[in-house]
Length: 307
Ligand SMILES: Cc1cc2nc3c(=O)[nH]c(=O)nc-3n(C[C@H](O)[C@H](O)[C@H](O)COP(=O)(O)O)c2cc1C
Picture 1 (spheres, helix red, strand yellow):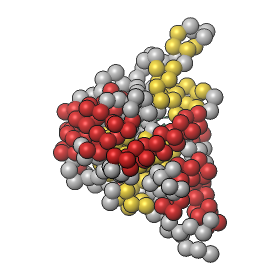
Picture 2: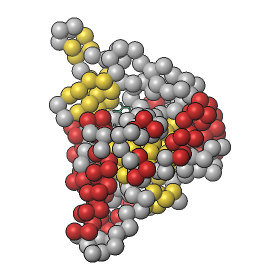
Picture 3: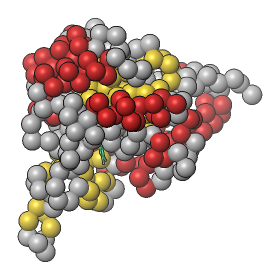
């Protein structure tokens, strides 16, 4: 039996395995404690945090589609100060690496949030410039290279002591340019994809399902597109000479799905919507990757890469 080492290091952050709970789908970790052994996860991304508390969007927030899930949560969260005081100590004690997902409406708000989080024990900052469900800021920063670079640079300066991962939008017309601009502005790693902008209509009420009209699509429906984006982004960064670790996600629901992303050169994967339907999905994926590595006689995660 070969010895396997499932740990990965992303921009200096050690994860005991490459499976991370995706932002917005795992609360602050402790919510799942009675359901699964949370300590087995490689990392946990918090729900999107903003400087001030946000109540989130009115109206419908979740809507299922064939093989997918649409959401319009609108970044409901208690604000960064409350997170630091009430949630972080428990989250920290669970064991997995702690990745704080940061959002904002203005660059100043992002920077101040980053500064506060930089003074805590978090392991990494995930800068969310890709939320499609807020009217101001959010995805607007992630669609354009200049805007993405501006917010990345400010956050980098405000939080110089933490590794910075920028979460990209699949809705950007030119993801590779946005990614390169973020790396130039100080991003240590990139994660993708956030949700795809989508829409549903209630044919009986004869109006859009969501108050904001559009919402973000996640789940198995987006997986092949997300995988293609991860594959192409790695190649684009290589050509630019700007390779940084890429954390892949989008519709991963089982071991095979996760392996596809790791083979496409994702340094780690995040799992979101699958956890709602099956809370043990991440644990099964960790075990499944280990079994695959033993069967294939691989000893390290990066040996999974097919490029
Ligand atoms: C209900 C819900 C809430 C989400 N909230 C956030 C968030 O606060 N910040 C963020 O960066 N991504 C958020 N996301 C996006 C996920 O982290 C992930 O990028 C996306 O859902 C694709 O992965 P999946 O198909 O495995 O769910 C949310 C997704 C869902 C379904």
